[in-house]
View 1 (cartoon, rainbow, N blue to C red):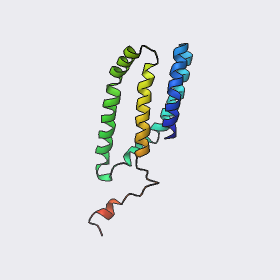
View 2: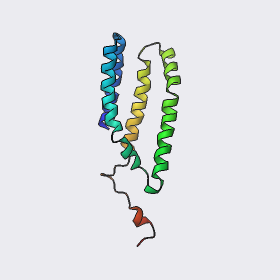
View 3: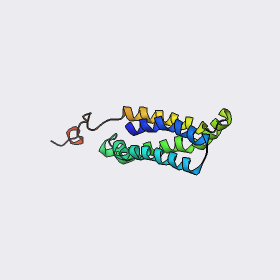
View 4: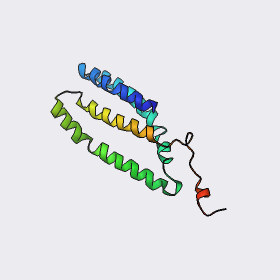
Amino acid sequence: MAFTLAFFVMVYPLYVWVAAAPSIERLLVMQMLLCGAIGGFFGPGPTALAEQFPIEVRSTGVSVAYNVTVMLFGGFAPLIVTWLSKVMATPVAPAFYVLLTSVLSLLGTYCMYDAVRDEKPDAVSLGGES
């Protein structure tokens, strides 16, 4: 959650900084900083996502959750960002889409089951094995 929050805090100022004086150096600095935050989020992400589902449906749950998310937020991103750029007429318009998705990610991360904090019943204790 800390890396998602860091990403949220950094994204708008970095977009403004790059838009103020566009250069390859500024773009690379922005990319490195944001990729560091994304790496911190995506490193434990697959494990955290897998823990949200019972073992019996884990593969299906992870694949559906991941692919629907990528389809909605990644697939429609060019359309939404193009529309935002046209409506807002500012070079930092894509930052607002990224901010919105960061807020949704923060909310989702906050609501996730935590294997260390929360106890989940064993699959064996639920079944017919004695």
